[in-house]
Image (tube, rainbow, N blue to C red):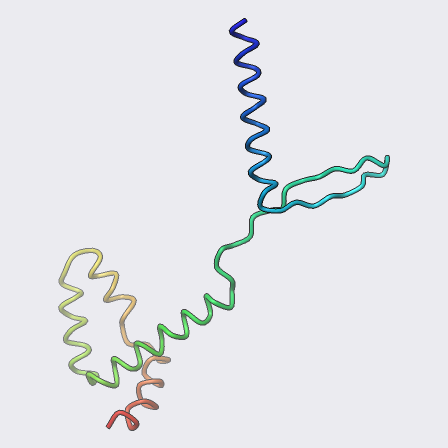
Length: 114
């Protein structure tokens, strides 16, 4: 009796899992023998490539703005303080280091700020 109950619970769990997957969307296809098979849609990435591109662009604009506002020497001094900190601060210093794109953006924004 216990084995039958455990098998029933497993079947119910499988059906609940399939039902949750189908709630996010499904596709129906007809096999060559005429049987219609319904399958859940595959999960897509939550972040689209466009929004990722916009985030990276905004990040470089932010770095360029900070670089233009502080100046290269002050910016480097602050990065040096970060490089001497914890592992997270070192990672932040590596991400925030001056790169050619941020430098160009800084040169373009600089005259507007002054």
